[in-house]
Image (cartoon, rainbow, N blue to C red):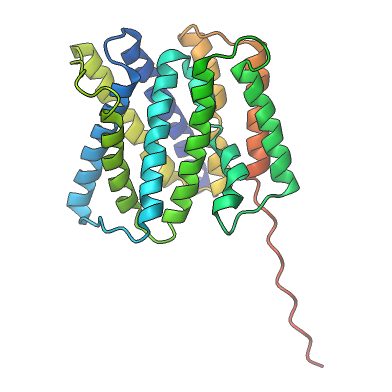
Length: 293
């Protein structure tokens, strides 16, 4: 029981670390000097340093077994993080976090196309439909408040979901450190393209925020990864989704972000749908051995 409580605390800590990361991204981009594209580059640069320090300690293992899966994971996740930071810049931390956390819905909807062990069930289909109802409310689709950044937010959730599908395939054959190494390499390449030669030198306070952003990002990933030693995958995933409510509440209380009835209803629908698609399928019982008379 003590171990499980420790796991719960670590998962919730990761939720707070990831949320604090998004707040710092918002602070960095508020002044207009450092765009979200450049912040995402710094995120991968800091991650690249940390991953290499770890590999220096534990030995380099950069040989890919399933190149397609590893590089797909790296490309899709890099694009998702780039989109995430852009949405934070042009929208609110609340909406950006909610859009990012819709990825389980796209895993459930698209997984059967790519993964042999995934299939559509009535529970999954209902969960996906409920969550898409929430996405419609959050984005303002049909209410006259739908903007370009909302399109990017929906694309963000889709790309992040495809990244998770690629990760599941890559983990069947490749070492986690190998996958992380190529994620950081590809991330650096993809995120340096948008700003090219227009690199803006951060101010002292912006450097402080950037280092904090990278630190919270690492702490979030570290606590989330290690928490699954103590809690079940479903429990951990659902606690992680509490960032939907943390971002909405903290955004309204501390950042002055608007929290409308539509956003609250949309967040609840998305969370409900994710709960449905995340529930473990009942395991089939093995046939009873024949009695010997």
